Image (cartoon, rainbow, N blue to C red; front, side, top):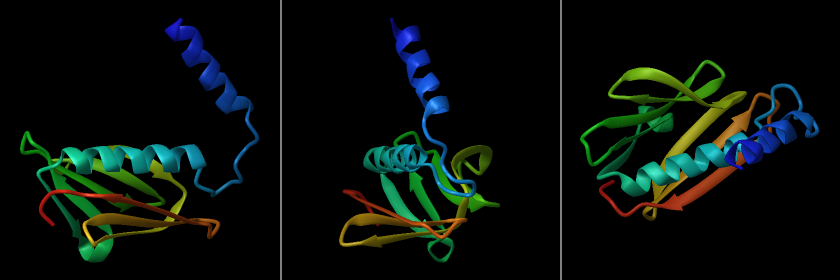
Length: 124
């Protein structure tokens, strides 16, 4: 059952109308924002680094999780190691903390703007 459901979802992605080249896929934006929100919620500390170009958090295990731009994508690194691409076709990303919220603003290579905001309850 799980395999059939997963296969159907993947098949649907291949058949769905294509996103324009150099454009952020809406599904990727949603998944990336939700992943960041989940990790911020579980973090013991959250901060913005590199003049708003990176989001850093420390999880309960003491690991430093960082979201940062790399070429035309946003990647995730843990303890300054690894390279997990999270979001493609990104021209610019900006993170900021305001009123106990993380605000993320991205611009695709085509110039489309994306924005997400979610609350944080830990140190800023």
